[in-house]
Length: 462
Ligand SMILES: Cc1cc2nc3c(=O)[nH]c(=O)nc-3n(C[C@H](O)[C@H](O)[C@H](O)COP(=O)(O)OP(=O)(O)OC[C@H]3O[C@@H](n4cnc5c(N)ncnc54)[C@H](O)[C@@H]3O)c2cc1C
Image 1 (tube, rainbow, N blue to C red):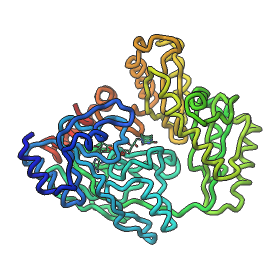
Image 2: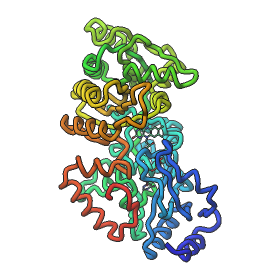
Image 3: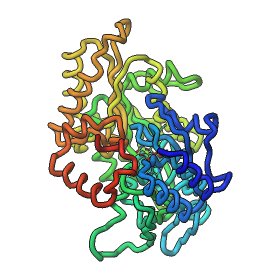
Image 4: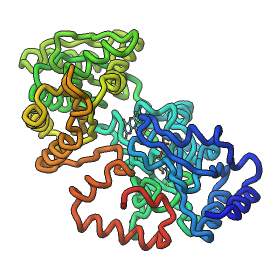
């Protein structure tokens, strides 16, 4: 990559539109879990679609590769450059329109999710995507990773929440696919190509997002669940009987115990629970909702699906319940050698997965500790294995355990990456477990749109 390219980019973008200062660039070169360290001499900070287009054109002419970046909260390393030009979308942070009649909001790629949620709220609408990184993650990144989060069982993943996309293609052309249409059967649905593409097919510059009616009633409960099988029965019961379930999260004993141990000010609300389920309900009206939930949960207790239930009495308590769930990742991060997984199986298979995975891990690495938690309502578990207490972390057989977990997942009809993506972290597993015909089609799409392989060339494909 030549200095002449940086000079051309700098001239096009102006002083606010780029940085070559290592101190300014540094935070963009390390990701949240500190697993990937990057390098780049040049960070472009375009403020408009026209500027993104010119940046990509100049890079394409020079044959220089690009790594797009939003909030830098991705968990598979694909937003960290290794010598490529870093294109940060953070200055493209305008909400272009909010239309409550069309139930649509158009935001630029660098808008932080929390600001989209707030803009929807200000218009008395709901944008339902919700995840722990919502104060930092951007619309472009959330689209490019097809983010999931806690409301997937009711509203779907990002893929279901995007109506239209504007993107800059790898040769610099702008594709204006913004639209609030719910129905448009005019050929291939091209926006889907960019959703979950991890920046490998172009740079998303804006998107039209789907809004919903704002729920007027909201309830949160914690349940002491004897086993994952009981959790599955409880899930089925509350979905069917209340019609209002918006989240169903599960945490095993160790998940919660490690929150209480390692997260200051956190406490374990049900120390005797083998598994704890967090249930959230939403409805258009409060009328009868709490009574319906209480009656359903009392039936569940009678059926033995839960042995105890705590209903949040106010918003502060509801937030405290969610706080435990959101602290689970921080709780076990402090515990040394570990391997983390983000798998999904059919919802009905979650108890089978948990039982078989525990047996297989115990056989391969006796005494290892298991942290099983996540979005049981949509079949997505964040499954972590920690080294045996007192054992030498250097002898922890992490990769072998990951192979066991992945094989089990696939044998149950699941996916080795439910919501975080492939990035650079999972390319080996992707090649091993993804259907070869699917990979061949993906390569064909990549080759057609990005023949020079300049868009995030290290992500997805090795
Ligand atoms: C605490 C925490 C909790 C999380 N919880 C969840 C969760 O519950 N569910 C979930 O799905 N994920 C979760 N994540 C992962 C992460 O938040 C998501 O992947 C998020 O979508 C990334 O957004 P970002 O703006 O930070 O993107 P980045 O990290 O900057 O980039 C992610 C990917 O998108 C590409 N990209 C970024 N912007 C663009 C663009 N404009 N055009 C093209 N490509 C682009 C990058 O090249 C990279 O491949 C969590 C992460 C953290 C740190």
